[in-house]
Length: 193
Image (cartoon, rainbow, N blue to C red; front, side, top):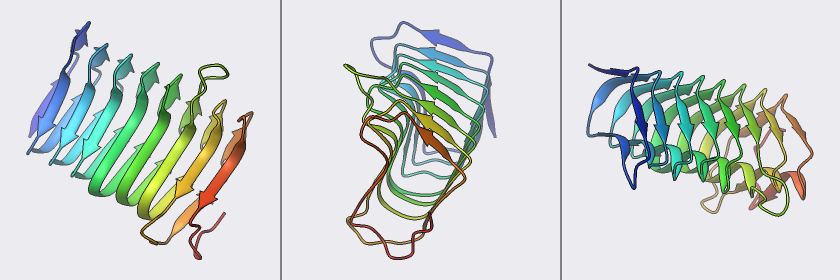
C-alpha cells in the first residue's frame, strides 16, 4: 500500500506523479501545476482525491488500469481534465470540478464499467472552445448521472465504433453548449437517455 499526500509539484517541463505497475495506491491532497499531471499506468486499486491539477497535459491520465476512483478533485485549465485510454475496467469519477479544459473535460476510449457521477464540467467559450465536456469512444457499460456540463462545443459526444452497448445518461444538467447537448455517432441500440 502506498500513500502520497500533501505534496506540491509545479513548474515542470514534463513530469508530475507517475504510478506504474502498482496497486493499492492513495493520492490525496496533492497539487500538480504545469506538468503531465497524475499518470496511472498498468496499475489497479488507485484512489485520487482532494487534489488540485492545473495547466497540465492531462490532470489525470489513466492507461491499462483497473478499479480506480477519481473523486473530489479540482481541475483548472488543463488540456484534458481526466483522460483515459486503453482497455481499462471499473472506474468511478465522482464529485470533481473540471473547468477550462482546452480539449475535453473527461475523455475516455476503450473503457468498460465506468461511472461518471456528480461532476461539474465547464468548458471554454469561443474562440478557444472545448470540444467535449465528456467524450466517449469504444466503451461498454458506462453510466453518466447527475453531472452539470456547460460551455463546450458538445456537452456529451459519443462515438462507439466497436459497437459495444450499455450507455445510460440520466439526470444531467447540460446547457449553454455551442453545438449540442448530446451527439451520438454509431449509436448503440441499448442506450438509455
